[in-house]
Image 1 (tube, helix red, strand yellow):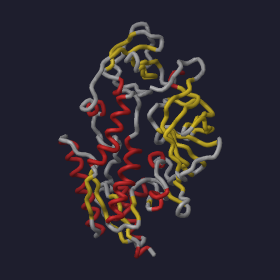
Image 2 (cartoon, one colour):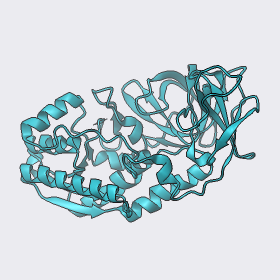
Image 3 (cartoon, helix red, strand yellow):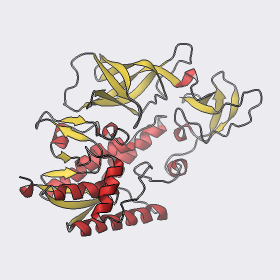
Image 4 (tube, helix red, strand yellow):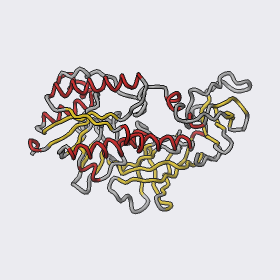
Length: 373
């Protein structure tokens, strides 16, 4: 069956997508590559990175003797991902562009292009797994718990999962690099990308300042004491330590300061000292804009585990509907850094059930009352 099945792999220039293509070819599939360009600007560093990635993708395609297509989705990315993220930043929230990119670019624009090219499936280098029959697909964790990327993929629907292959589901990252070396790929030891998808490894604040006007205001303690000046609430996120420039405050202990809230009404950045200050902790949250992998979601309250960030340890929780498209997540123990605008992703064992966008968090008793930013 594999010999008659055509798969187009999103070759990014990285080692994960390269090994995905190699594995599929070894399994007898008709494999082709597609290099996506999702961002364009006049930044020299960005252009050089894109050109390097394309060179690496070409080397992989040549080594595998497969065709390499190219597609420019920069317009779609700007309209469907970047502009939305700017709106969220301006509203004081912290969006996750990588999740939107997977939903709207890598598994929509890319999938549509691949199908038009005659593909039966698309494949990527994500660490995740798909199980179940057509119409009842399940999104499952990868074997490598450290690399598992289901948090970024929770918005995929049944149509997308029916056409998706994740060849790295059973592999660890060291095993992937060893296979890349075995296959003769020059990028076998290429470092993992750690930057936000549309800006890469560049300074985030500096990049964002090109698109969002700075509106300076006061940095105050949770007791209302003025401590300094911020450059604009959009440039900060809850739990942030770096970039506050609050060292050596007279009358305070030497513990570092952290952002615990944004007061948009008064343009104030509220901070507190200590990594685990009670104002950073939450007993639960509410979220909206839910997406369920099965297209339906739980019929009632359930026990589950929840993730607040990629690589965030699963925390036991309960999930309860509280209104149309609104659910409350209550944690078994307080969690740090619950951030409006970010996603909470729900699991049942190995299965990723879906997730939603955090709107408010419930403060630990005795801490400041924390609502939506």
